[in-house]
Image 1 (tube, rainbow over the protein chains, first blue to last red):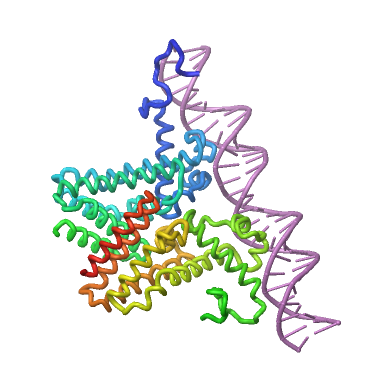
Image 2 (cartoon, each protein chain N blue to C red; image 1 turned 120 degrees about the vertical axis):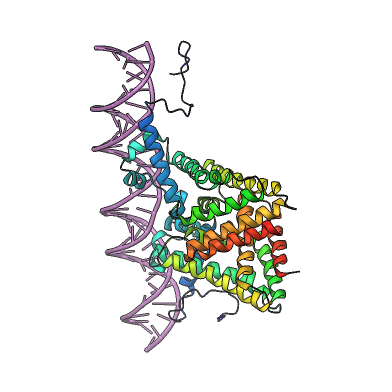
Amino acid sequence: MASDTTDPAADLPAPRADGRRARGDRTRHDVARQAAMSATVHGLDAITVGALAARTGHSKSGILTVFANREAIQIAAVAEARTLYLRHVVEPSWPAAPGAPRLRALLDNWVAYLRDGVFPGGCFITATSVEYGRREGPVADAVRGLAREWLDLLEAELSAAGSDSPTDDAFRIDAYLRAANTRYQLFGDEVELERARRLSLDVLGA
Amino acid sequence: MASDTTDPAADLPAPRADGRRARGDRTRHDVARQAAMSATVHGLDAITVGALAARTGHSKSGILTVFANREAIQIAAVAEARTLYLRHVVEPSWPAAPGAPRLRALLDNWVAYLRDGVFPGGCFITATSVEYGRREGPVADAVRGLAREWLDLLEAELSAAGSDSPTDDAFRIDAYLRAANTRYQLFGDEVELERARRLSLDVLGA
DNA sequence: ACGCTACACGACCGATCGGTCGCATACAAT
DNA sequence: ATTGTATGCGACCGATCGGTCGTGTAGCGT
């Protein structure tokens, strides 16, 4: 019914908060955030509308009026996790100079992001990229895109740092961080986080 | 261990040996194997009795007469995955001398184990240890035990190889293999497997 | 031959799943 | 004030979940 001749008003797409959507945006954000939190512990594919309703205080049908279906919630959860990752890891590291200084800041902030428990189940990227490794569809695409974004960022900074082989070095550092996260979740020993940071610094120094 | 002549690895439990278990053991093995396969793609916690019934040709209730409940199937799936891992990765490497030669064989066989698609979703240990990282209960214990077993094996061989710090080096190699598996699943590029092998050989020092 | 037991099945159960529908309510633009 | 739209909820739907129960059957020991 929209998009007619006389009314050039904004249609469905605009991600703008025009005031009336304040309430709905709040709901969307709450649900996406809880979904992202739950995903790191029980898996992104294990979220249920009923459980999210209970955790957020909304009703099942209320959630399904602001989200088309469960898949839309999963995709929103990936987007929400991305903003949290940017806020806690990337943005605090950006004031540092590109290259080695920024990479050192990224490592510090990544360790803090895990130690502070931004997500209850650790690194969102690790959890979801393993879960959706061999799957297809919009959710898998979103997960794949987020993982790729992080790898590209890492490789770009390593190039700026003058690495001989940024691809190998990005692989190394990413592998250390993922492994540290997994061991930290499995066995609860924070020394794994420090180990990953130290070994990553070795990659920068060598 | 091997009590039979023709049937390799048909002994998950060991409560009694009354001889008549042939049929039931076959069912148990089929179900556990299918559960392990599915776990690497859709998660160990996503298996359903109905889906396993459809894939194995048995009935739901038939499966639940040889397994106490779904949790018992999950634990049997971990045990089955362990025997597959031993058969494809560990045992073929054991003829090599302890230390560096055996580690080189382990790397070769691990790459082959992934490239041959022993599990449709790649490395079982990586998939399940990430999935159950922050959970508790018998299934999580089994997953944790399997991951620990592999790490201990790796560290022991590195000690035998005369590594200066076997813990760090085991962390490195394990991290490379896990990361290679994840990237191989996500992006489908076999070069990641070779990269992990090459970087792991660098750790060995030659 | 017999009974015992493990295996296997169909029927069925309550609970929960994702999702729809109708209705009430807020809010913005006219 | 009226109209249109986005939000929110309760009731409800068919499907599927893990699991139980009763029955039948295929070996195995005696």
